[in-house]
Picture (cartoon, helix red, strand yellow):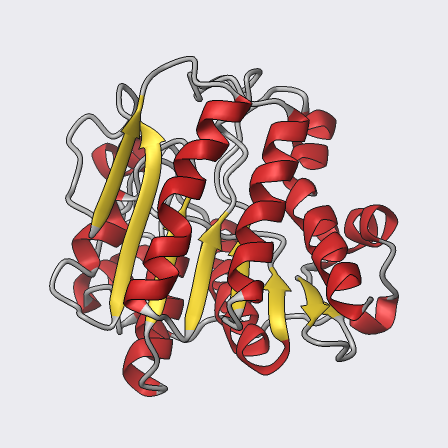
Length: 294
């Protein structure tokens, strides 16, 4: 998890070990800026997920149909990974509240519902972090979801929660077929390019910050709007993603609001290219940090 400082405070990185080396290379931060999350407990996860689902998920009682819906075969390893991923998103939220800007090296599993997983998402890390911050810390949370797919699970979970506002910009003719209702949904057409995409975000984000007045922004920086993404259908470039992430974080931090980011979706057989795309948000965060300390 990469962490940018607010108003000159010491920045840090919080990361799973696998993501640490790449982020250190690309964002020019030091190993002392690395934080490692704790595994998410069952009690924490139960603030969003049902007891029955958690018991089945933890203990391998997930049938073949349920596994097909998620896209993953069940294993003890995937349970551990998802729990650490969720712990990382919560840690990012807590560190952002302390320091102004934090970026996880995982997260964005926004298709998971309280009672089932879906679309490569098994536990909804964004929802767990937002629920904890809004309920336990009594803070208002704005979820800015710029993954190419609508965050249907997150929208469903918070449809009647006034302290959490869900904002999604997504490709309308893409998964999920059946959309849920976010507090604000912006459906865009196939093939949208950098300039028009960024203009769409610019048209709505400042207004949301001024009207909802969140205490924390959780930003899903999915890279699947990329033109080479295998499941995306939009046409953003690497530079377009960078400008998007830079704009979101600059705008939020400029309003004095803490922001925690997760990497969201991204689909490619070329893992090295995909990893580079996922590091874009961390490089943009480093730029925001430098601009704030000038």
